[in-house]
Length: 214
Image (cartoon, rainbow, N blue to C red; front, side, top):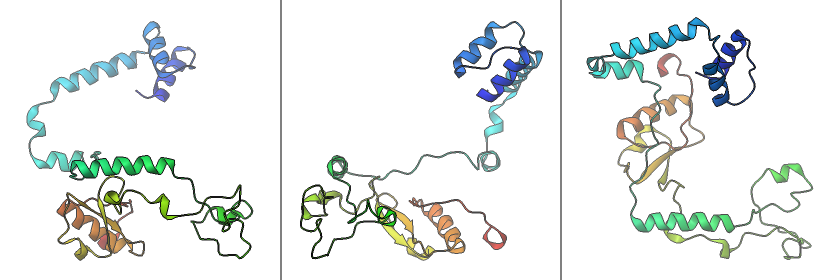
């Protein structure tokens, strides 16, 4: 039961509703004024569990009807030991890397929300590398070359714009990123085609399928 349901039972029994979930459960168990509906619900659950037969789970129709929204783990790439070590090294390097900010990001709010841009002013204090200025992007901040261009999960990202771009991709090493300019019509076809080929979509999103998109 959820915390809200437990609190409703406590209110019905005239008990306090403060505390964590474990305290609420203990308070209900120790109380002798538990409503009869709770006992009836528990008995119904036990009876329904006993009535479940293994034959009910046979066939694909059960899973198609009852488990459409069942959570499935994200697909992982098949990597060798060298690539795994390179990803761990890159992750450790990123933790030591400073945050690169644009020149005068503290003065203008719009600059604090944008990405990095090299300072080019003749009198720029950041370009001249003066004290108390934000660090600039340099070659020395580069990461390990073996993990360059890989997604944090280890997949190689492939930008696609149509469902035909998925043909020939390796689902064990490559993952799909749908271009930003793709609409819902093409996105639906890409989702369906990627699921058939076993490819992971890195920027998968939910959208309502209307009309001929269903």
